[in-house]
Image (tube, rainbow, N blue to C red):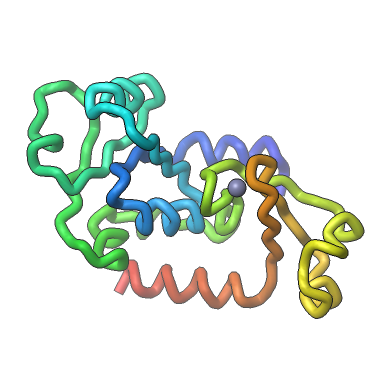
Length: 163
Ligand SMILES: [Zn+2]
């Protein structure tokens, strides 16, 4: 896919800011390619400020926070089950296989393609043999590889969110 088209698609998608107690949900949103930021140890005011500035949807489990008067977009997450939380976001229509695993699940950074020769000592031998496309996070250095397991995983998530 052309990078330009790819970036446009990404820009159109919702971006999120989550409270620290929604770490697991943030990871899953990142797996699905959503920009899901968690800022540690900052005040609610600062978070709301960031939501307004960066046009993020604030996801919180706090009724008090979700009732605040400032004009930011928010979703009060009711469930403590991650699958249910994903459903609560109504993401089904925004799911896109092309964006699956394009973001680091730890840092929320966009992954960059890396030459397979450069990862030879960084991934298990059988993985290196089996896969040809590797991506890396420029912040934490974690390496990701695409394969049929991604496709199966994506289908599973999609089904669970649309059923
Ligand atoms: Zn990372």
